[in-house]
Structures are given as C-alpha cells and as structure tokens.
Length: 178
Image 1: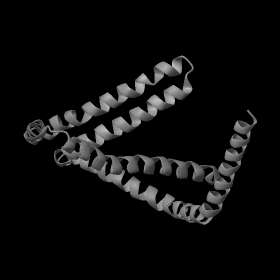
Image 2: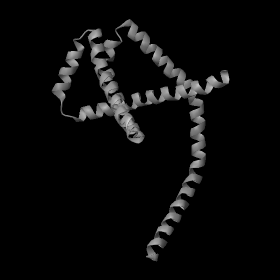
Image 3: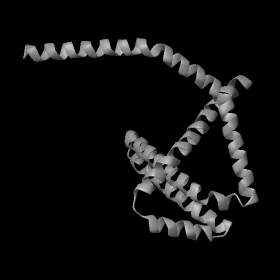
Image 4: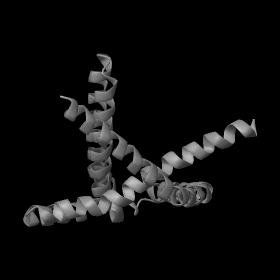
C-alpha cells in the first residue's frame, strides 16, 4: 500500500508546488500590471476602503475574485460539452492563470486584515506548512531532474540542430524539384 501512496503524494506535492509557484510568480506580475495602469486614485481608494473594513468584511472582498475564478472555470464546461477538449483545456488554462493572478492580487491587498482572524491565520500556517513539506518531498527529485537536463541538453541541442538541417535540406530539395 505504501508503494502506491508514495507516487500519489509525490504527484500531489508537485501539483501543490505548481500552485505555489504560480502564486509566487503572479503576484509581482500582477503588481507590475496594476502599477502600469494609471489608476492611482482608484487604487488608493481601494486600499483605504479595505483598510477600514473589518477582517470578516475583508474576507468577502477576498472571496469575490475566487467566485470570478470559479465562473471562468465553469465556462470551460461549454466547449467540453461539445467534445472540444483542446479548447476546454485552453479555456481552463487561461482561467487558471487569470484566477490565480486575481486571487494573488486580492490576497496581497487583504492579507494583513485576513491574518488578524485566528482561524484564518491557523489555516494559512497549515497551508504554508504543506507547501514547505511539498518542497522537502519534491526538491531532491527536482534537483536531480535539473542536473539530468543540464547533462543531456547539449546532446539534445545538437540532435535538434541536425533534425532542423535535415528538414531544411528536404524542403530545399522539394522546392528545387518544382
């Protein structure tokens, strides 16, 4: 039974790390996008409004983007219902990125107030603990995979270059035959 569970936990850890990576990397990107939009007064008003809200009201503000994200995921069901798997995957991927970005931005703005609630802080600490455990589980394998990729990269590049050269020669020969 343990043999079956270990790959499951590893896969779960990788998925969790992917979510954490998206979260960590989308916050600065969203911050850059929001900062590049000249909405300084609106942003200042939003920050001031959130600052004056109670922690439970701030939780509602935080949950609004989650509802939008859930709605975007539901949109992916429409192409899926018509058997358009690729379009459904694309819509789901776009929804995932947009939802994670919006949620990351909302959490970044609301985090100080949300962490004032004891139950939220406990949940936050538990999730951060899970993230750290996922790193401890997956990082040795990921480090090994990175070193393996670094070792095979030169050979793969030369094979790919030879493949591209063969394709060019075939294309040139096809054009010259016409």
